[in-house]
Length: 289
Image (cartoon, rainbow, N blue to C red):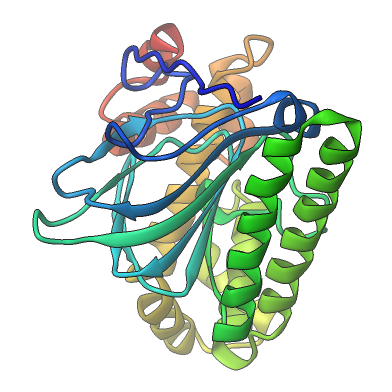
């Protein structure tokens, strides 16, 4: 038996629900999907320019594949265009939404799984999200996995829940293999971004990354401009400020402790940097959260 999820909305940054597609667009959940940790499932054509999805956080890991067209991924501090053949993986800590031009249409597949990916590396999403390009054969396999997901969701029962768990594993393996195929500059950039994510307290990222990757600073800057459209310092600051905001959600940590962890000798310097980036002081952001 199929049960359509009842959707509720609330304040843009505290929302914990899923915005549905327009009326008549399919999405569902069932007893089997709940048991397997699949919280949301949708597919089909979307017009995000006419029906945008507001910025929000969701209790689960979003997998969204773009089968045709393009879509604009809206983030708290930026936006980026996702093209055909890409899969966007978004963690629960990352607020996001979808938009586009009024004339744009895109065809998507979407899952939201409750638990983090089990494959090492997939759960380490830069800034809370990552986009993975799939070759046509892999994209066709992903479409088949979505069809299998829908089929198992209609069957229900313990076996269906186990089958859905297997589908999730196959999805993660597919994406992990796509990442392994990346070579050259793309691989080096991913390594650089992962290092920045692991060292948010590094206040001299250009020198540190140059030593780590054995690259000239000028080559490193070109690498970031090409793959992310920003400088190394801008990327490091974005990662540091996201780590700061995540730290503020932990009531045990004081602002001073968070500042020291992120490389600031004085909490005042941290407060000024945080306010410049997010538009509000850490204390105000903590109260709002």
